[in-house]
Length: 579
Image 1 (cartoon, rainbow, N blue to C red):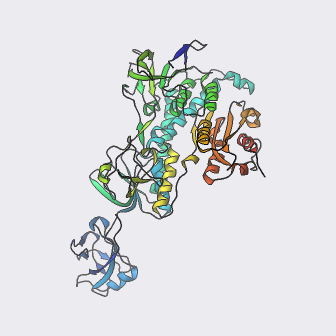
Image 2 (image 1 turned 135 degrees about the vertical axis):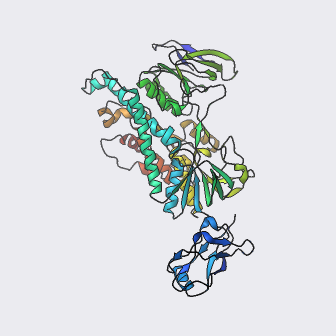
Image 3 (image 1 turned 45 degrees about the horizontal axis):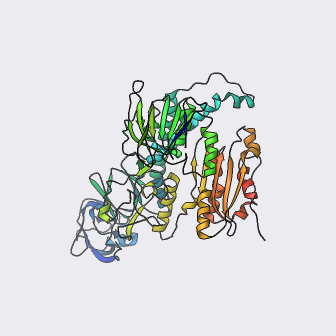
């Protein structure tokens, strides 16, 4: 269907519609000038014979206590590993030779992680906990997208703009017996809050790694083989490598980004301006959150959505609730079934941004829109270029690195590339920061010999609008389609925030929660919540899916009163139990 324009009370028309080799024993020959009680040698003078794979150490001026372990430096002993016990070193002082172990594979680290975002950080900390020697290579800044250009600074903007919205809502405050005067905000102060928060979290992540001994190496990483990574003009080897390079904003063809009037979320988070009228291309989580920010600060917003309905990835019933609560009462319009096939930047205050709209099916131009600014929120693309994946026989799929359920990278023939793993946005399984961290932890468990497979159906997600939206698992539509295909029944239970004492006390009782499950196995298929602090309420269902808890067991759980948690309690108590 083509878009239809309907006039409303809004200020603008509303548009609807290497296998390791075994260790070898060799003789470590000491020079005859060695004196009793000391071993004269140097870490930097150890040499390897390529023919015999043995190590020799030349005499030097450095004196090492015989009670200390003698270890050849990894960087100077390529392909070997020298290990000697304290007792062996002591005996060496009184003899001309002693035995050491040389391993044909000598790595600088047990694990090297390419990318220091939330996923790489989670993997690094867990690897240290598992006793590994870990390094992280970062070509940008610690924290990756989430901390610097994503979920962290956006929450700061949402927190500040949310306060502005709340204090400007005179009717809501009057119900609480509160009166306020003129409410103003400092745009730069709001922007600084986001910048400062990102800096704080970035420092926290950095300190949490370095304090545990994780080495942070700076440079753009390139794979040489499945155990070697180059960064800058240096290289490092590792038994295992995790690719955690994240993603960048996806910009469709025909859209010209200038960073001022046409921009992605990267630039929007700087909040350099609050445009009077903003077009947002895409009505997913990113678009919805920015519509919340902009309208709270006084902007009008128009969504441009290619799908037949707005918020296409949401459960249909929750989407209708979101439209009623988050879009209807605000200065937001939208158009569906159209593509922004051409976007030309403007000049702030001088020339508008021009957006060419084309029918989604026919690709024919159907309209032109002129706005003050345009935010491109059309999703994200994996950041995997430059890794030299061909060196390990890997072909990306639309830029994503192929992996199996253990996060092991697979080559073009579908075979596992030994020692190489990929987590987070770069593999495309679930592009969420906490999913990346969970994948990293699971990968470390697997490389430690404890198979741990992440159940992605148990990973929750949230949209931090006012009020929030959260979910885990399937939509009702997905669950019913699966039920029809596999031949089982689906039951849906719902409840409202309007009966919740805490929500009523806050005078914020809009919203609902819905539970989707199988009555035969009592398996939770999904849960969706829209309402006050919905993001904090989803984890009971998420953890139940992860642990395989039967839904009937949750109806006997106890929740404090009066709390918002009683909303999900009400849903669980509706579950029917059978003898």
